[in-house]
Image (cartoon, rainbow, N blue to C red; front, side, top):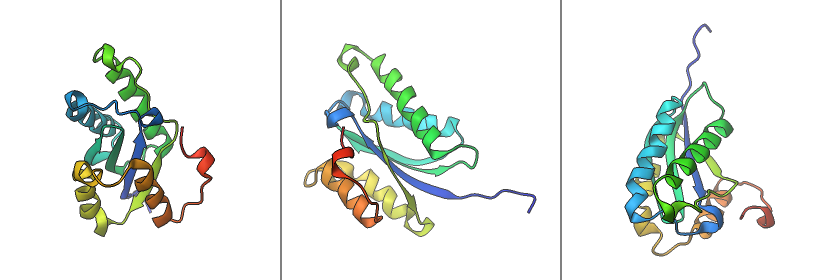
Length: 150
């Protein structure tokens, strides 16, 4: 086959270090736009970026030209450096070491997009840890609780 055709939808989520509520209303929209811009630069078309004060969710189409691990590393390093330049209140901004990435069936993309869009309402009743554990359970990911959080 002479042409490489790929369509990999990924739902990525990661939190601030120790889930500190550092993503304030004053920076949230700009941060989400920045993360989407990093995805675009890496030819991984963002569908939606959202989240709340202690974590983010991204839904994007992963480019065939980059490994997921490399994309996540660039997202975190570039955005962390960028946000620290936004003011003294962000001097101690860090992302957690790990992340969760889950494949999305093309038929489920709209459901995941709506889920990310409604993060504020969703997290009025469910904490990030509970949400993340549910993803791990749904995707049958084996994990050791001692090493999931930092």
